[in-house]
Image (cartoon, rainbow, N blue to C red; front, side, top):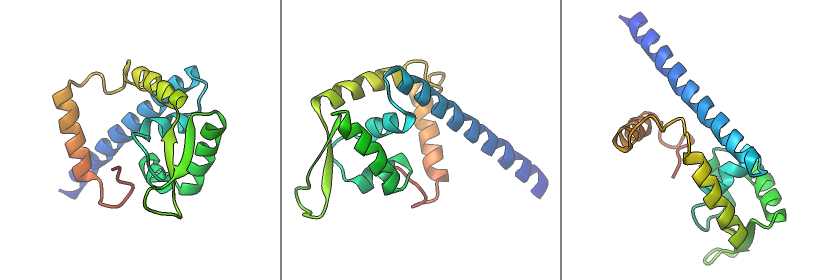
Length: 144
């Protein structure tokens, strides 16, 4: 009985990994058309509003030092600004500039076009999202 479950889990893991790879390839291909790296595109996609470096790193599923490197590049391009945090003197808020907002909008448009998830209707996407959220161990790279 254990063997069939192990096979089913291996096959499911293969499918999840395959989808993750397709999504990563899709992001990379779209990012290049905008002159961005995949990491920069991911940061722009995840920057849904002012947030700290730690919050962005969590959303990007990376270490804060890696997010800092990406944000430094985006800041040099005039796409992100670091501003004083409204309630924590030690922290900075990352905020998109006007150019950053425009580029993020173009990026989101490109990412939704021919997405690996485009074969699923909105209801199916919500079901998949719910199942994946159930499967993810709390605190292990969970996105907010």
